[in-house]
Image 1 (tube, one colour):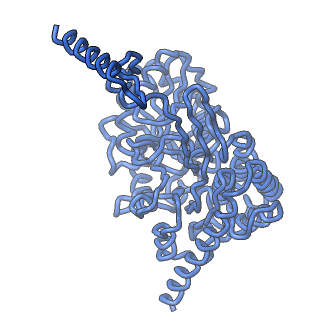
Image 2: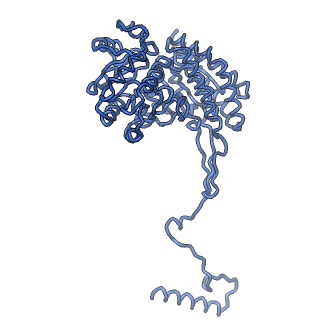
Image 3: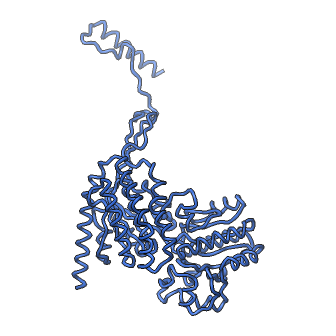
Length: 496
């Protein structure tokens, strides 16, 4: 029976890709205006059903808060659309007559979109909009743990897209979720590009599929509170970020790094705003619960509240605690310590250093341990410190005086709204961008010749205007004699 389901799932993927391939051939002829009308309809429909879908996702996965998922759905639909709607993605993008260059936007074709369980409905919305905006069709591959809410989101998007003029097969979704189905999708020769958002294993599978892929690595962003920071505001932003949807956005802060000079004030403010500092014994007890024997993080803590996690770990904490905080030391940053790794829940490490130089070095160590290329946040009024961090950190996003979770995805900052955050080469990703429709097109360039090969070699091509180069149909003896004398004179001049 299992074998039959595997075979059925493989055949389903093949059928979906064939349908998407047919649709994208028609989509590739659409004007920008027609594609934009489809995307607008999708964004409107997603906003209309945003709350319902948010509640479905929270109930199905058990992750986060449905109220926060409503905002995520807005980010994945209306906020994304508002940012990309004026982008020119197909047809003539740019023309430079002086340089003889034309650039034409060309859709890639079929997008394979892997959807995570942490942000299921919002990521489905976001990837559908940016794919169709670029003239591509899309095949959605749901995480099994969020399949029902993703399928329901797909139905909303498909109905809106086709009602607005999209050909059938523009939006597709796998319903038989198996390992074989995912593998077939990733390796299908008609898939043009893979958008991989999920765990490290899934991203590595995408990059090793043989098809082009844009994947993202884990986030493990430190948050540095520097001595010039507005401490109450910094703590408020970190608390809001780390508890937003119970910490399921990978750009959320994973550790706080602060200076000895202000450490007592930061600690007091964290306690005042609902943070609880674990005792050494509690930290060790929670650590054992967080990290499984195989070296991976316990999935039971993902998207849960601080109180839920404490109860599961057998730890007693004050009622109303919003964030669990563990005091840590630079010497303990390693893969076997869960506090120096990505934690998609309201748990954060707390480090104290002497100054910004030590904070800079520690942040690099944390990021290299896990999270290289992703995101970190700074809370400071010192622009020189921001510059030093920007020049040295192995990351793609430095967020200043803003919550990491919403700043990284472009909700509270001016960077592109996105739920696929590239980590660059240092993080094993093909891009460091917040992925937009511009990452899902090819650019065809038309270039007129501006010079000849002789010009590149420094040679000069001249036209002879004297008698020796004149061509006549009937040469008299006098003409021949004149040409001969001219040639001899030139040869003598060269020899002299």
